[in-house]
Amino acid sequence: MGTTLFDRQSRAIRLNGAGEALLSHVATAFDEMRQGVETIGVRSGNLLRLHCAPSMATQWLMPRLRGLLETQPGLEVRLAAGIDYPRFEHDEFDADICYGPPRQEGLVVIPLGEETVTPLCAPEVAENIRTIVDLKSAKLIESDNKRVRWAGWFAANDLSPQASRGSRFDRSFMAIAAAVDGLGVALESTRLAERELADGRLVAPLAGRAQDVRYIGHYLVFPRVAKSRLAVRTFARWLTQELKLSSVD
Image (cartoon, rainbow, N blue to C red):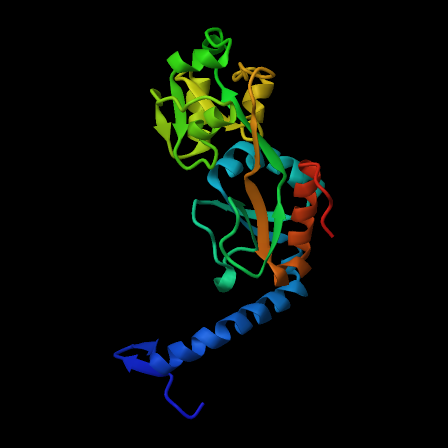
């Protein structure tokens, strides 16, 4: 290169300023080369490194993981859950199911359909909730990081917001668990609580008597170069089929 790129320090060697500057320009190119090699390699066909929002991973994805692996016996899944939005420059993940629109540009973005957000509670709690007005005296469980919260739900039903007198959690899976335990009424996605609704641990006490909020909460995202990988295409196709969305080619 005609210049020094590394500094030696005892037994260590580190990039200097020129090396860091070069790295910032060539890192993306090396990442694309690496993924290109993986695309035609044996490993690329069966390994999916997936990042997922915690509640989506716990409540929806994990219960279906066995079905995915049974229908795709050659697929290997490495799943990590976290609230951070992974950046794909360092090739740590192939795809992400994120909560809320992705913050990084240049990605393939697949909205995962509308979710219905409605009050949910244990059957014994529901006995005291016949109308929206009954929520004024109920313990309202708040999910701090939810995009749809109680204030928005009351506004959608033309009511003034009610002060939350219940517990507060920063993840939906904890709010759902609290509602199952009878700690109050959670305002949650029926997608995330589908198992609890199916087996009767939770009910929607105001179904048909209040205005639900519908919104797109989760997105499947991955770098454009990753779309050529069989594992990514297989997972995207399976995911959209599970959610009854338009198929992904």
